Image 1 (cartoon, rainbow, N blue to C red):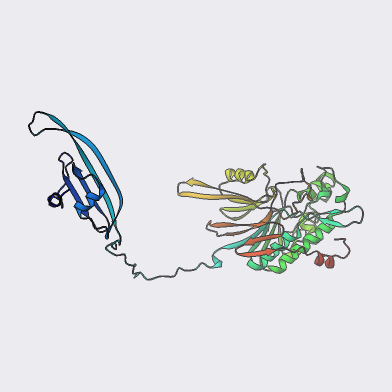
Image 2 (cartoon, rainbow, N blue to C red):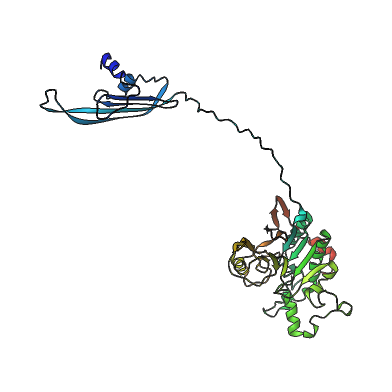
Length: 418
């Protein structure tokens, strides 16, 4: 390659567009942050020749990729009598600058001129808060050797309920049934002697915990539902002593209080200002047009199965106990005025789940816990799950650790072997 050839080829650079059909065509392009060079013809066959002809400044540019292609074409000789084969080459190179130029226009921070208006914070008076727990199954197994009473209820869970009541001061407390186990009142199952004569201490301890709750929230509404275990007493009276059914003392006959021979009457609920909802399984308590509580009369095998059935059967939100599992299913119903989400929730139990409570099997699929329900009369509601594991729970950034309070109970009832 001679200097005259190079100068001749350089004159063809610039904006001249390449034509692959005509040998000796060049293209060279420089941008802010990229460049490219291209040759098609018979003379330049290497990258070094392309760099020399295009005067590529390697101090400014970095060649990050190139390729060289070769093919053959037929052409007539100078005399026109013969057909000659001539090789053609395509040499291409792509480059980036060693010091890239800044992108223009340069990015500028956004200048915020919109004034900030602080949102109005909600107030507690706009909603009602309910602390809900279920199925404590107050009851005992009495040792046949030393008469020691082993509780079916879990005192650590009940203590956490009391701690949460003190912390959040709910407007109401709802106990969704089976306040007592009453294992010695049923004839549906074979009764073991360990359950005999345990109703009285169960009543006394249940009253002690309810009185503690009343002291913690003196102004709250407290409601207890009759559950299927509580109903064992009513069933036994109707079956064996119907004359005692619904009896009240003469001076209390016209007062809306539980009868003397009922769980509500024996627990002394009227003296604690606690409402007793009788008539299981029709113990529905409507908190609003879109929300009700009851003990529950549906149990399906498998986690979530019971809540799913309740969600399919209802057009409003429902909370129940009975199944001893934490379950929640939400579905959306469609009406003319628009969508309406509803929830079916099963509140876990507050009894022991280690096999102490009589059941069909020792290892039951049960959970312990409670719920914090907040709702408005306009239909809004929120169900906050309280999952208790080994006497502890995390709720709203607080760790609650339950104490069994056995030492305090022994002081209150020294005549019982607790």
